[in-house]
Length: 281
Image (cartoon, rainbow, N blue to C red; front, side, top):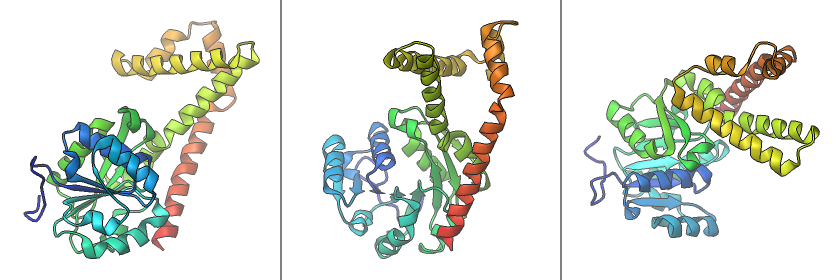
């Protein structure tokens, strides 16, 4: 790390989180779990109610002024919408410490977008979390910009560790991460919703159908994570020749299941690139 980086009494870098929404608050919680003292974390959020709730829940410092929040911070986490990012960066530049490390969770915007607007040689790391991070079961990627070093990446991983799995990917693969992890929880919820509706259509009451679907998918995910077997192998074990499960899978395949998933993935990548081009332009 740069010798300019500020640390708290714990020896951990001081952090400013800009944006107290779902992801911002999740990262605050993760840092507290990882050992960051509350006094070394400052959250900037314009809405009083949300900011005060975060201060009360995590014993951190709160402010409505983002420029004030980053003064003295060694790490700045940008957790605002991509559409707000240019304005936020413009307001922060004059208050950033020399050697500050910038982590951004905003989708679509490349590291170069930040590097062009921040002081020369500022390390930028793109972070792509997903919503299960809220319950410590997330899948998050980190992608270094031009000036981010191994030490910067290790720091980012330390901040993110309590959110779940953290992997490194080059920035040119970040859209692929969006497909597999960033947007995929919504695909999963849509499938659970569809399975629930199928149960209702065949006679289950909605509460029972929803409960069974949730537990089945939770259990299946845990089985996949802990068994060491591939999804293909686990699927084959459930699909007895001539049985009801195989009949269902064949019907789904004939209805274009793989094509539907591919179409969704392609649409997500295309929209990410389109949004990035619009905002960067």
